[in-house]
Amino acid sequence: MAVFDTAFNLLYHDAGKIDKVKETRGMIDSIIALKEIHFYVDDLQAIGFVYPFGGKIYAITAAAKDDAGLSKLRHLRNNLVIGFAAAILLTLLAGILFSRKALGSCLKDGGKGRGNLGEPARPADRYG
Image (tube, rainbow, N blue to C red; front, side, top):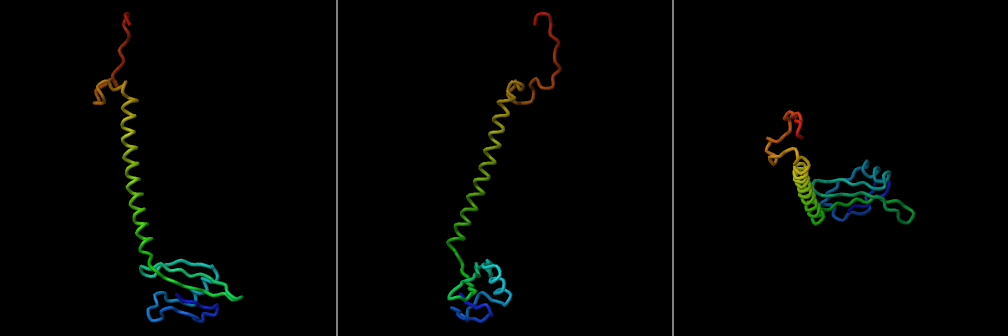
């Protein structure tokens, strides 16, 4: 975590020797203009935001890796993929079932393709 004033003066840094976020003047200016920015540094999630205090404005940057949150996102992704595949499969099975029911009268042989579709109509004889 680092705290800067609007003139890009570093006021506080929690671990200067292992600094993960390399702040630049442009980054601090963007934080001040946009009030909040989100970005990644390698596998770390980082944030920069404005913090008004005592009539002054400070820009704060912080970075961390949220292993628990990333694990939940992976789990959610897997559930969505499985649910989507199950929904597609269910739709296909329902389509097959309903199409056979709807076309059952046209396909006398149970859907094997030898029904009365495409056969020429016989003229009615005098008995019916």
